[in-house]
Image 1: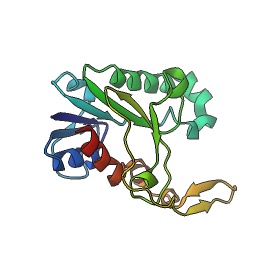
Image 2: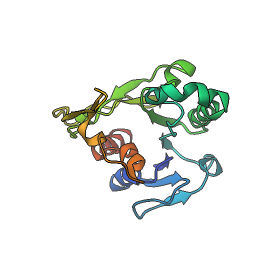
Image 3: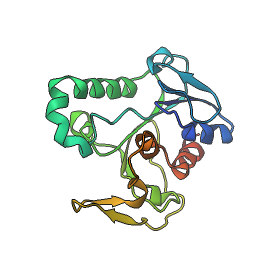
Image 4: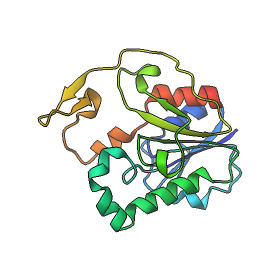
Length: 193
């Protein structure tokens, strides 16, 4: 099966499909963090290249409710609409099977509710990271290894965050927080491949 993993620089999902014997390629504006088939550029350049399945990770910067306090500014300057348009472009791609993932955000009201909401702790990682899945011609993922939900950290403002998410400021913090957990990538490849 030919699999496109859109908006992925880490190679996590791409490599999970390759391990299952599929012809998989990641695509992102950034170079890949892991050696392997990767198109560095705009995903629109390759959407029509005959893919059987696309796993899409559209940027959530302007869509996730975690950034709601900046929504007015992002609506005014067009960033939020650009994010919605990009998400919908992936959702309407000419590919028979599609899975799009994003955190809880505005796409549930701007488009439709997700087909499924998953957590890393359902796939062998002691962590919480609420992830919405919008599916086209794919079944819901079945949990593979339910474990504890992981430690939490309470910030100075009283907000409770998953311990893995509580990282000191760094230039790569956003990349670490956005990576796909290996257990989830493995489940996608095993169940959708």
